[in-house]
Image (cartoon, rainbow, N blue to C red; front, side):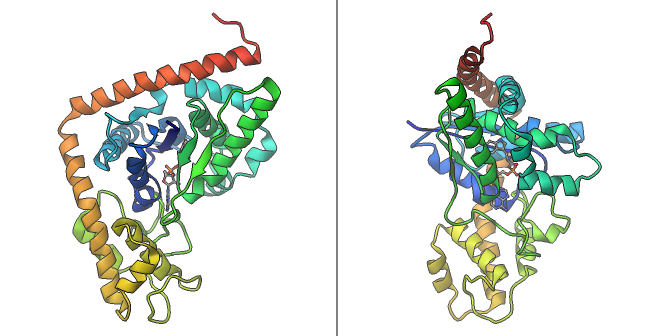
Length: 328
Ligand code: TYM
């Protein structure tokens, strides 16, 4: 079986973008692949976090993975800081990554603009740690939204470089990006990505928003001039709503357009809101149930860390040997 690795940062409440672009697809892959899903807490401290919030959110993200259908009997679910090989491999890979290529990363450029008072070294080497996450498991595929494509590409570059210099060591991973919903945009400014840290709360749907909130946000969503409900470059608002609708109903965009032929924007926005609320309701119910079962949740991430460590330490041993470190 081919192996899959992916992760989410516990740096804020999960959004509909995280769900549609990533987590929803992870659940579908579990039967056909060997899947490893991580909560990347080491990455999240590249931006200042309040320790108590980070602790709470890490567990909440874990429970949202499970609530979204990631089954600990089928997939490995674990917390990044529990497996030390990530940080250890990141050091070695960092010595095989160039300042130049890291400074070209869009996420680094954007985040250093946004957090100008804290452009720390971790923010700069973020993609190296992400490469270590992926390569330490010899992952074949990395299911992510479009915004992570550049990071998967640099992981491939670093892996290829290492393989050429030291001989074949790493599997070269490939990004696995969904056809529909790879880039969910803000409901208020559809030219920007829907993000955990959107300053306008109406732009972003949270996985745990209740039905009324979801409907209200969709009713207020920005649409475009004209009245046709069609996916088109000059209709970013409508196009975004159509991709959200298609993703949650598992329809193609063409089918979605047919559903709304001749209808008005008001009716359309309400229908998208309802489809989203209906999709998220069972996820939220399961999340609440898991919140009452702390022991089970703990047993999942402990078992996950053990399974992940086993695989990761094998790669790390191999890497240490190749670079010339003496075995202990
Ligand atoms: P993060 O935490 O920002 O996002 C998690 C996943 O959600 C996707 N995503 C979106 N997809 C579509 N539309 C959106 N608006 C949207 N917003 C977020 C992201 O593409 C991602 O798949 N660097 C990663 C975390 C990471 C990782 C890894 C991922 C660390 N190591 C190894 C894969 C493999 C990140 O910040 O994702």
